[in-house]
Image (cartoon, rainbow, N blue to C red):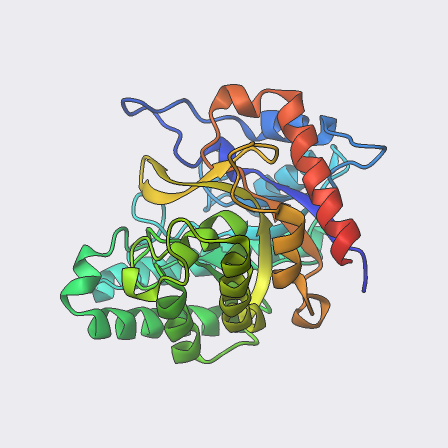
Amino acid sequence: MTSLKLHNAMWPGLVGKGDEEGQEPPISLDQMLQWTAAAEVDGQKFEGVDYFLFHPHTDPDASEDDIRRIADQIASYDLVVGSLVAPIWPGTVGDSAMGSDEQQEKFLSAITKACRIAKIFNEHGIRQYGVIRIDSAEFGIDKWREDSAAGTARIIETFTKAANIAAENGERLAAEGEICWAGMHSWKDMLDLLEGVGMPETLGFQADQAHTYLYLMGINAPGHALLQEGYSEEEFYAAYETLTDKLRPWTIDFHVAQNDGTVHGAGTHDKTGKHCQADDPNGKLDITKTAGYWLEGAQERGIQHICWDGCMFPNSVLGSPSTWNAILKAMVDVRTAHS
């Protein structure tokens, strides 16, 4: 198996940040790149970044020249670009994949804009692998619960249209399982969506170690829980095998992350898995061991890199070099063990 490239995510500088009460200000792209490039463990450095296509890092309607300048900026740090996050949420370009025709059109517009930028990055040479990440952009599950069958059917329709746009542009979409997004809030509902679209060559799953831990616990879908509080180590790995056996065949993008078992939120991400520092003593996961369940057969599914996700870390944590070195060490350990 080809050695997996190690990427750092740029969106922790944006997601959950803002000017609302209780929020910290966004962190510039250049600052995130500086911190990424400075990390080093035993001579190993990050090799690339995964990238959110929205302000203030990127105007999704930026000119080709502006996108190429961003590519040059990233390349100046000896980094490449891998997976991209489409601006599919309300307040960005898109809107709910479960919503009205107008909302669906906004969602699909975000996919089209993401594919345009991906093409520019690809032609520039800064990007040679990776997917475009999406979710249902329907925050919370209350509306979905009013008619879950209709809600899931509408998301399947939207995702199918989105996948067709991606396929026309030579891209693949990865739907990230996260308990805050309707129709994707449990492993079973996520599987129903993937199978409902039925285009594994174009629409797959993005597995995040922090978020999928909460799938095990059934936080927003108790009937789908695979574990109960107070579980034993034996019970944990039996449940983890069940989870990954279901979703691994669909997994085309992978986030290394840690979770302390608590539910956390900031801004529009109000109920989701809390990403912890890689060496957090309260972390529930053996990062290296559990990563192996997801990465089995990764190359056959087109996975060429793995990415750290430290979404909603405080700015002070992001500004500490020790944070990035600990993350990089965890990434190296995963790669050494599984590629």
